[in-house]
Image 1 (cartoon, rainbow, N blue to C red):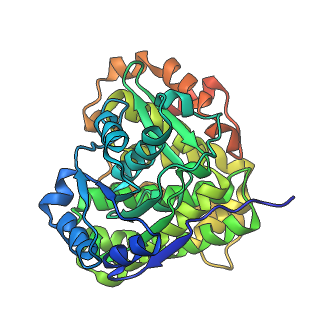
Image 2: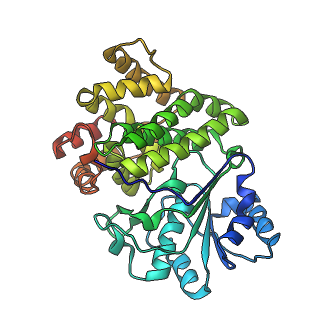
Length: 385
């Protein structure tokens, strides 16, 4: 069977890529961009640098900087109103996955109206929203190269997956220099998020030869460099590798879908406000251990690509090394347990059924090499303690 590959129209990758934004906006024949970002990007001076690049092309811009981590229906409302009232012709999304996800939703709702739930998967959204120029500042989510956005509905604490070509940015400017200021915790969480994207894309039932090449390339970049950037944030070579690996992992999972880790991760984030990359990190070892028997050869290839298994290792040996690495990585990167994060145990246990139902409803577990039952998902959640 053939596979449809959806990518940004333009991918600009490397040091200084973000400073191409003024020229890119002009090439798109846009004149009135809205910068969607967060207050940290303003504080760090990144927004001012973007506006300077725009000004060089005689393009003025406005800023919406009220996005929040793990965006919600309420958090994007003001941005949607701004788009409806402001006559903007494109959006510049600057920041980590949350500002970029927010921008994707704002671009669609601002143009077409309705509420976010109207666009929730299994609907596949194909209507073009405002053109989005995505400028990521973390090496993790890959949102600059994906056809997805995640928005939480506060009314029921559900993380809604919205999918379709409408959510694919028109342009991605991937500049690793913007990640040099990231603290170790964010570096670790976003880095494991990227690794999870690559692994899940590779073992997904929707994988294709194209997504496989992107996922393997991503793991070869991410595996050897994640510890390096955690311990030395100024390691430019490792930062560059992580940034490219994150984008390639985004391309991979955008075209192959994610699987059980992400399906189970979203309810934890919605109910307990655990950052997305961190909840993925909490789950990755346990979910891999659950899944590995159904996809031994592919998980072994993950181990080899990450550099934790040798090419001559047989699959069983490679997978043993993979599991050792995933647990060791969490220890070295100080990934907390649910208890260490501060989640109340009784409250967590009382919500296991609900979280399992939400995980299954997301559709992601169906892509897993071993598709779990609701009871099996509950048991994996229990392992987080």
